Image 1 (cartoon, rainbow, N blue to C red):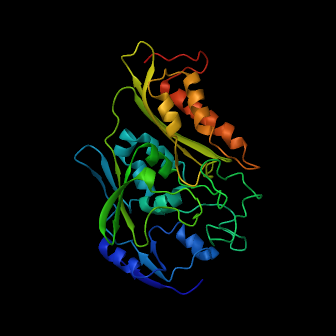
Image 2: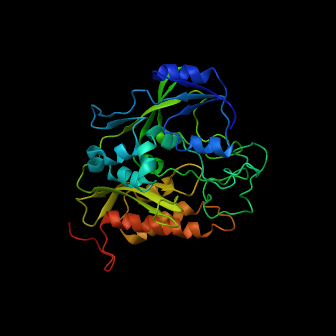
Image 3: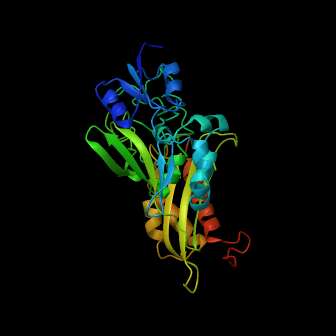
Length: 343
């Protein structure tokens, strides 16, 4: 481990000022990702700005009925909050599927969003990796690709984003509150993470020194025919990273002669460099009948743009199947008769 300086920030503005003036500075929150990278030699900041004392660990109700989640709220506390479990159960399920209890007790909301890929080549400093060392090449291309991207990848990087929480927040249309040198700004979470392009070393649109201070959740969908869930497919049930995950919100028209979809919000995990918002599928589903055929067509349209590599072609079929299954569950379709259940 290389020597580095260490400071404890007393307030968000002080943290931003300390990090902004040192190009090699990094923020330390729960440490569940950064400390691993320090040990592995993946990163070597010359300054760690400890955020542990910041007053950012509260979950507060907003005037419009939404929630403001401080960036230092622990994942376990967010998953267990009664308001989250009642109004946004999809988020609670995503958090509980994301890691062991010990990690959830340490990991923070802001840190979860900013965790880096678990690509085996990124985590091995002896192998070329454009994300770790720009211009060195991508060892995953032609290598082990089971966990890698099928959507939005580039010739420079096919890594995937590891967060479960971020997938749920993407489907919820959450907002990220960021403090930087130029003051506070709000970003739709759907715009926070980047696809790799020719700069895979940049995971997000944040500038150096920018600090996530909170996540804002919109008012809950309490309509009787609005439902949401999160489902994760993985190699083992014990806290593995997603091969494919789906977060979905489905709103049905209760006044239609037959079950009809008013709107859908769908996000996929484990398939791209960022949580993948399934816009094509959403557009096709709006106004469509709530049937398996509608769900199959929407899933197929979304995955038409998939570009798998040798070794992960199965994820295309898997993603389609999970999307159809999740949407059918939310629509209340009976598995045997393939008809809507009585409410």
